[in-house]
Amino acid sequence: MQKFTVHKGLVAPMDRENVDTDAIIPKQFLKSIKKTGFGPNLFDEWRYLDQPGQPGVPESARKPNPDFVLNQPRYRGASVLVARKNFGCGSSREHAPWALEQYGFRAIIAPSFADIFFNNCFKNGLLPIVLPEATVDLLFNEVAAFPGYELTIDLERQVIVRPQGEEIPFDVIPFRKYCLLNGFDDIGLTLRHKDKIAAFEAHRLATKPWLAHTMAQG
Image 1 (cartoon, helix red, strand yellow):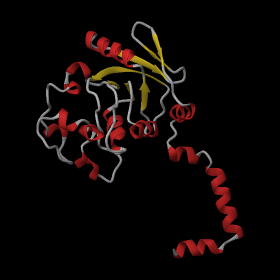
Image 2 (cartoon, helix red, strand yellow; image 1 turned 90 degrees about the vertical axis):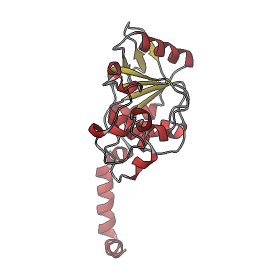
Image 3 (cartoon, helix red, strand yellow; image 1 turned 30 degrees about the horizontal axis):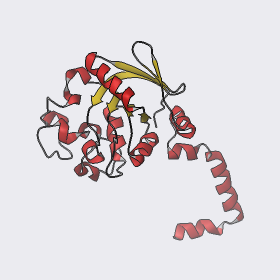
Image 4 (spheres, rainbow, N blue to C red; image 1 turned 180 degrees about the vertical axis):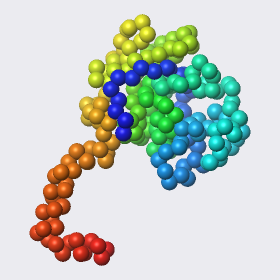
């Protein structure tokens, strides 16, 4: 998983409440057995005019919706998303943070998130930041007023730095912060102890060799 330390990026606004995971990555794209390739279909039903979108169709063959925010030239290359309340509601598909991360987003700022989506973000290298609704409104207004609007997010210091230098503090659970700073997903956390795991397995096989035969038979 990619580490998150300090990130400076262009901000895009998603000015809709209750954006659910089927809007983030529609159900027909969940058939893939891979964990990659979801970025081109992020917000597919809003992003393209040729609907319904289908897996395997190259992005170059699609018809973009010029009115959708991520298709507007001023927001191309955005890596910070400002959203409204209850972002990521609906089904608990982990494909939603996969699609956001693979599109290029590193952080999402909103007044609230659906719980499962919020947890899945941390496990996939995305930083979801909860801020008061009035502060989110301020960011929406600044994004609209200033083309090329960028924010710097410093996870170690837990602050968002606006272009003028003002800092907005945010909260994050220490364990989640530790995992993001070090790029540890669940597997990465386990592999911190790989030497101990290997030593345990070696000792177990040395003292109970019949277990290896039993496991092979199973």
